[in-house]
Amino acid sequence: MHSPKRKLFLDLVRSIFRVNGLLLADGDRMAEGVGLTSARWKVIGVVALTSAGVTVPGIARALGQSRQAVQRITDVMQTDGLVRYEINPRHKRSSLVQLTDLGQQVYNELRSVQDPWAISHTEETSVEELETALRLMQRLINKME
Amino acid sequence: MHSPKRKLFLDLVRSIFRVNGLLLADGDRMAEGVGLTSARWKVIGVVALTSAGVTVPGIARALGQSRQAVQRITDVMQTDGLVRYEINPRHKRSSLVQLTDLGQQVYNELRSVQDPWAISHTEETSVEELETALRLMQRLINKME
DNA sequence: GGCAGATTGACAACATGCGGTCAGAGTGAC
DNA sequence: GTCACTCTGACCGCATGTTGTCAATCTGCC
Image 1 (spheres, rainbow over the protein chains, first blue to last red):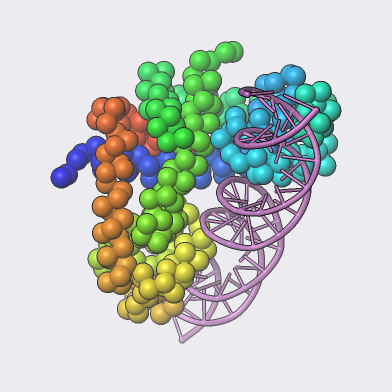
Image 2 (tube, chains in turn blue, red, brown, purple):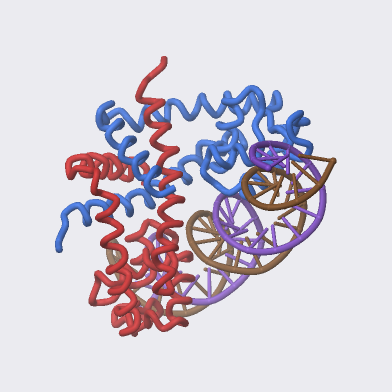
C-alpha cells in the first residue's frame, strides 16, 4: 500500500531530525555571546520561569529528558555561578535550583538575542501555520510519550 | 513588543526538541527487533535509496550531519555485515557504501515495522496538516543551513 | 508506627553528535 | 605541468544524551 501520508510523515520525521540539529547549532551560536550552550539555555529557560525554584528532576520532566543529563548541566552551571542550590524544605536530598543574579542577567541577555531570532524565523509564516504545526507536534508527543 | 508568533515559535522549538528525543527512543525500540539503532536506520535509509552506492560524505550531506559521525556508523555497520565498501572509480580514497544482502534484508524488515508505525501516527492527521508542517520545517531548514 | 513502592543523587558505561587537525587525493585556472 | 583550493579519511577531544545500579529519602497505605 502506497499511503501518501506515510511518505509525508517520514519526510516530516527527517525534517525534524534536521531542524533539531540546526536549532542546536543556531542556539550554540546565539548562546556563545553570553557564555552559554544550547543545553544550558534549555535549562535556564525552565529555571527562569519558576521563581520558587525547581528540583533537577522537575527540570528534567519539563524538558522530557533524563534527570541525569540535567543534573550534569546544572552542576556545571553552578560551578559557573549561573545557578545556586537552595535547601528544599520538602525534600532533604533534592535541593531547589535557582538563578543567581549573574544567571538572571545572562538570561536577560539571552532573551535579547533569542527574541529577534525567533521573530526573524517567523516572518514568512502565518500564525495559523505555526498553530497547525505546533498542534501536530503536540499530538505526536502525546502519542509517543 | 509581545509578538504572539514569538511565543508560538518558541513553543514549536521546544516541541521539536521533545519530538526529536521521542522519535529516537521510538526508533530504537522499533529497530531493536532487527538489530539496528536510530542512527543506523537513518543511514541505511539513505544507502537503500541509491542503488549505485554513496560515499560517506554523501550520506552526511543527505542527512545534514558531519561526515565523521556517519563514518563511525558505517564502519560499525560494515563490521556487522550490513554494508560493504566498494571501490569508487571516481575517487581513490572515498569508497562507495552499499547494502549487503543481509543489509537489504534488514532494511526490508525495518520497513515492515516502520511503515505501520508511520501510518499509525498519522491517523488523526490530514494530508493538509502534514504538508503545512513539512513546508514550515523545510522553510526553517533553508533559513538556517 | 511500619512497610512497599516511588523518587532522588551519585556514579558508571555507552552511543551519538560536533569541531579541529593532518595528510592524501581530486579539480580547476593559469 | 603547476599551484591553489576543495574534498576525503583517520585521528583526537569534547558536549550531550541515554540507560543501569545503588543507597538514601519521601509518600501513601495499612
